[in-house]
Image (tube, rainbow, N blue to C red; front, side):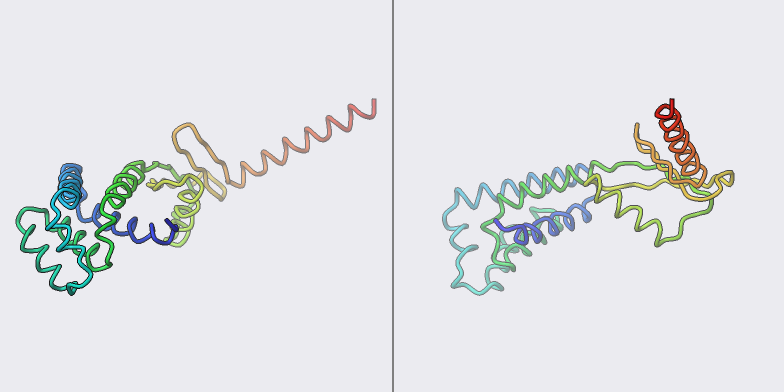
Length: 190
């Protein structure tokens, strides 16, 4: 399946999970969707009605609401209606797989401590988060602290990873590099 086709399913999964921030509600939605997927496989009349392209989408939505309203969490029902509206209800098993995958990805938030000389602007914060999320392919939770002893720049700490982008850190690395090169030059001159 082309990646652009998965984008819709992933966005729908993210929207559903955003509506259900509690893990137990997410578990319930996953169970409800799995039950509906099973019903689509085992109940031929249910399947034929929902996937019948000859029936108008509004009629199929009404059928789905009548059959499931009150039995499902509202967010789960809305996800089903969205799949139906987009003519992708037959992809419910794939949506379940994508939903589980997105849930795991979103649950794997990496905590990063940012220490800077001055508070970050909103733009700096957003660029930093986007860069780190792109690098690590996971959601980033930034915690910020200001350390006026820093001349400028920032440090980043995440678990056992540390990055020093302070002016003092850059000067230290420059000094180490010069010392290294000077020792190599001295070595060659002997």
